[in-house]
Image (cartoon, rainbow, N blue to C red; front, side, top):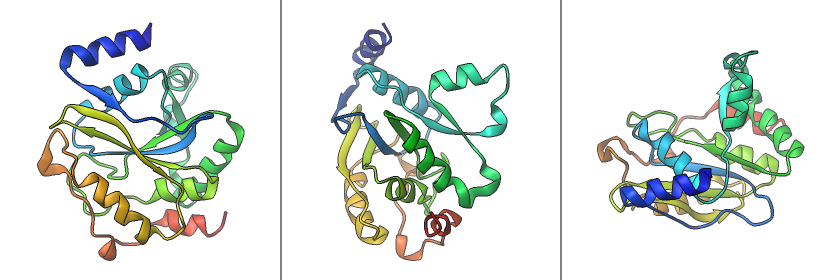
Length: 199
């Protein structure tokens, strides 16, 4: 029912979903960009639903309580302790170990405002959990979303990011002026990188 509904809505608004997720699960980290609008969440939900998947996303653990937990879990929410950002890699690596199917979707921009410094958590979570990264996208110019190249992180973030940059530079967010692909040579270190060295 949900798959049929989502596919119908996408057709009515002229969008199409392209690409595939890894076979056999899937278990992967989907980096999703551009992220320039609140509408992106709904479009992502339609896209995943239209191909029969439920995406997982991170929510601070404080949002989970007796009343909200059932709904947040059903939506794909995963509780994380953000007061210890250096431990998030370990938290998510353990989550991958516990699950046969886990599509963890992360927006590396971390904000809908222009951001020259993407968060690297998506990369180090995939590296630690030994799962592939999928380049997910929403291209409002083409009215096309879905899944692009799939790769296993090599451990050399700078080298891998060149392929990421090449893919996303052709994508346009709902508000193009808000989408900035970083120059990683000047990006500051992030606490999550230190976490990777300890897991």
